[in-house]
Image (cartoon, rainbow, N blue to C red; front, side, top):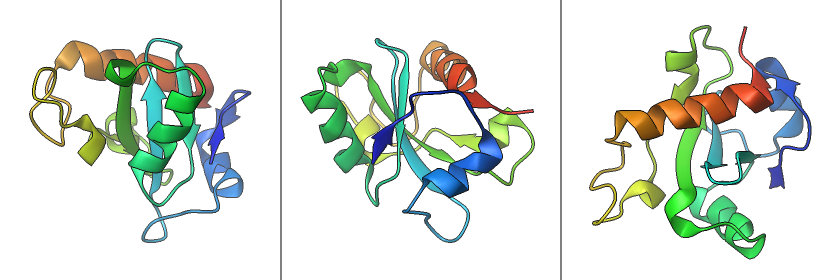
Length: 115
């Protein structure tokens, strides 16, 4: 597991990750408060815990999946994770709030070159 420390190309995600799911998916958690992206664990909860120990706030952490082979940003990022289920904030695996999804995409594109 690691918090990205420099901007990378989306194709380089494979070289950084030791935990690639189904040969083409990498789990990640975005800290929208601190504008960070952390990757590389079999479960989003593991990355979430690492970020919490690093000072993150629970309500600012969102689980996503990356599909590095996808060209369009909307196909590259999937907004599904068990850690996204929060009765007061989000009721589903999928991130319901469009503003939150857009903020996540902003943070992702700050760290990962998607074109």
